[in-house]
Image (cartoon, rainbow, N blue to C red; front, side):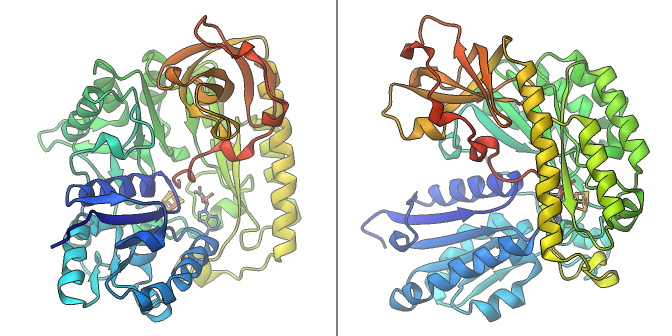
Length: 491
Ligand code: 5AD
Ligand code: SF4
């Protein structure tokens, strides 16, 4: 039908789960002959893979859809699709606010994207593919309507061929009162360990060195084999550990209550397991945690931190916080400040509470903390965290660390290819930048740390191959944007 290459544009917001979903959607459309382009207006198919965790993420998508209204009117043959969390949660609203959208596809239906694109092109009729809402059927029915979408991988679709996300679990059954995820991603389901191991084996065969196992509460992973055997996350990590070629195994995001000793033992014992745990606490006040229905107390979280550090010496731990949650008094907030001060997290992701329609918190409690107060608390908490991060980083000056080199840093991206500023991560997930040749990308290298900012370690590669004299460009100092790719998963 087409005498030219079919083109596809996709914008992804949100967590690693969305990044992986987009990778897989792009892979499936590439198999249909589509090529990725970076300009929406040059594409035959325009997709938005969306996030509903905070209102801001949704508004960004509605604005982007609004900007495309005229383009769509002038180019009616273009297919415009909304995928993911917003699609699953708000199909009606998407239809109302963006009637020019042709396709609304929920998180559990992404495997159908190629077929739906074709259907829109054939019929010019809008297409909708959604899983059941949590209250729209029995547990089994609802669960079955969320399909795990894990087709054969296409290495060329990943930002770096030597790193990959691997889904081990979908959905969430924790129902924290502020959170949309149990609605947008459906019931918790753990994938069969044999399938996960097979995927990791395939990835390793394609040159992948680092796998990041992802799940909303990844450490709650459990698979019942039906014959009395059960696989836990620790069992899974041990099996992946045996795969030749895999050098690093990470997992995100952890739920505090499920940080079991067998998992901590595996992280300590298995050399390929990254010594880094992301364990969101959300608040340092028991009353707030109770209203959030987080199922643990600050005391038990402290015990978990202590146990983790005792069992895995040198482990780096990071956290998430929500400030300005319903009824968070100054006293509650100060308890959170104290927790951050004493806990020495490697880093923290801090969010202002965003009431989400349909959640328990939104139904039961007023969003009673003014925006300026949320902002101030956000800044105050960040200031304490940044001091701790700087202190942690400064302690590493003079040490030599093993860095898996991911690519040019933000500064390096503006430098000509060859010897330029590169970035990578240590076994404790610390970001390191240094000067090196592009051919080192994808390799693990020893780097001597010379300088530190709250976000980054600056070093010199210990190799004859580097070139560039190991100079640290001052302009590189403080590059918070390199701190993270996408948001952490929730937990
Ligand atoms: N408002 C603000 N932050 C939220 N998060 C989840 N839901 C909300 C909300 N309604 C934060 C939590 C979670 C992180 C990924 O997003 O801190 O761990
Ligand atoms: Fe589940 Fe995490 Fe959301 Fe809680 S915050 S409901 S654990 S995804």
